[in-house]
Length: 192
Ligand SMILES: [Fe+2]
Image (cartoon, rainbow, N blue to C red; front, side, top):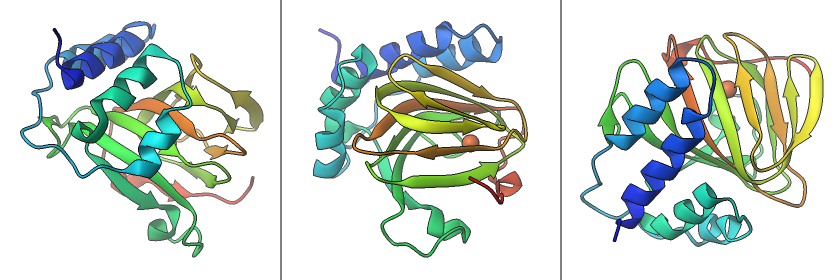
């Protein structure tokens, strides 16, 4: 039987295997080589209850991996975009500098934005791909707004502005950065 965390890495690798850009399968191979973490993280009931709502295989694997996934609480307020303490999201970094799988060329993992949250318009030098595996959000990419749900792959070339707004569902996604993955290039922008 495959251990829950290993199953999660395989399901995530399959998401990026399907990307036509060459960096996608490179990131997929890195996910397959991530070592199983030594320690479980504390349980996060709010994350688990959000994950319960999705039936995508990768989301089910993410739910079943439970507190093996190193979720961190984030807020856009730490970047100065808002002082609203409710404006929170969760990121689990799996591959990247100092992560479970150390890498200087890939930053990748999972993203979870709770219902009723606006993640403001921003950009960065890294090229970025999201694959939605649960919930839905209104997604601004450049000047267009679409509502995206499970199975959607969204790619942002370097410095393409993007934003996400959730309503009554959370947004759950796998995500990866390539190119210049230095977070110092991250900036918030004016606009929707
Ligand atoms: Fe981004």
